[in-house]
Image 1 (cartoon, rainbow, N blue to C red):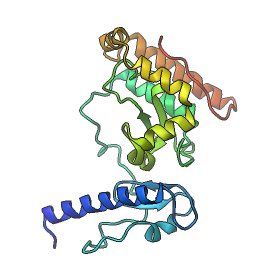
Image 2 (image 1 turned 45 degrees about the horizontal axis):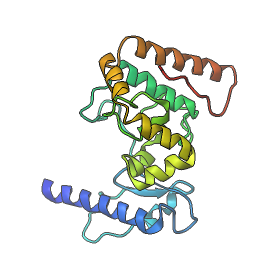
Image 3 (image 1 turned 180 degrees about the vertical axis):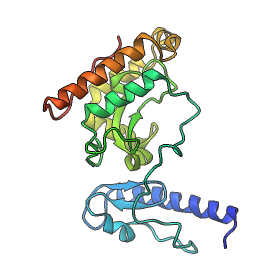
Length: 226
């Protein structure tokens, strides 16, 4: 039986191999050209998950239990967040972002609408929730599945390329300008994500849900607080 240190080392080796494989293949399956997704412990093709064993880089000296061909479901109770507190406004803003794209991943196209709302589908911030100037701005977030969020999360080149593909360069330039607005930062920071700002996004979310119930499909935009 392996020690905790050995198992931790194996895990880091797997993640390094996943990143290396994504870099070498440009994030595409070497068999069919489909988009690759990951849960941090395995790499598989969105088009055909069976391609996983042929896609991931083979790593010597690893136990078979380390690499999984399919993603393990994420338990809501075990889900861990960063040190930033999830405010009421964050909660409903996240729901708005995910409802906007119909609970369909904006990278790989996987459909979670039948499971909505689900923690397996994420609100992915481009600038990050630490920047209050754009933390609750519709331009700062995309709807991504767990695997794609792990692959492109943070201000990486892959995340930037995806943002440009979905939102366009003009919106990226606006977002970057807003992210440097000190007055805007202070105003949103003072709300603490509660009160009127939270009520606004809650109202917008239920408006979007009602539109879905009426048969509206595709992308539904939501209105920002200011």
